[in-house]
Length: 348
Image (cartoon, rainbow, N blue to C red):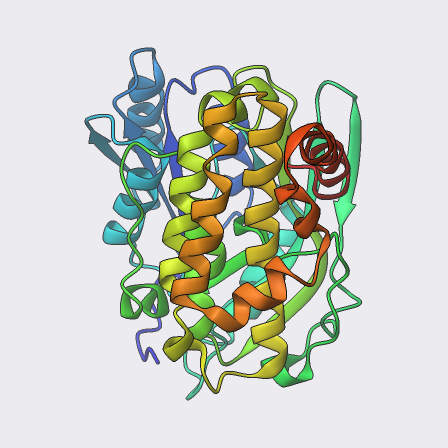
């Protein structure tokens, strides 16, 4: 709890690497909040080789009361998140990728609700809001709502949540964590790794007791650019990183750690883990590479060793069972599974 009336309500971290072509839109969307005494923007220049650093410094010169710049050697997106958290002074913390942006009216509403929490004895641990897929290739927008899971505007615990649909999950884009909670759980993302958003989306959840969902189309997630990490060719190229992140997520939730947690939270975490493994398995299949395919079995073995109950639910009680079938049938089902999950979860 904070008794400092001048504390920033929220810190926005904007990791940037060679972002000169699109970072303005992101930063301007954050500045549209207006009252710069309520928020700060931490631009992390991750060893860019274009004009990103100069653009960032020019913003800091124009808005010294709310914009700071961290220049670092290239450490990847995860290190950008780490540096943002290290330097954050806001009560809440939000990562906004430099090619994404926030809806002005929506974020104003969220920050107003956050400000109410500054002097509350038991403040909300995480605010949840919708995100919108902005697909440049298809010229389409798609809102990902969660109103069937959470009551709108009410502070609740996990036990009051309802069932997530198959296509629903809490991505990094939906979450606005209390800064001290992230520091308390020791959130630290690895350097030089892609797909580390899952660290932010999953690892702090066991510490979350109070949630508040606002049914607003806040985060605008830009997809469809050829050089994005979620482009299919890049997914295959970086398959080892998918497996590494999923192994790390397994290690984060050993059986002893999740014992006794709320049943609804446990079910959600199991489903998210199922998604991570499905993505790894599917990408291995579409790569048509036997070495990649051979990585699937050790992933299941690792899960079985760390959390056998989750292994039984994920390995034998879902369509993932068919991804381990040998020969052409298994590979065909794996590739078909990738196309289905790509359409449902929109991860590229």
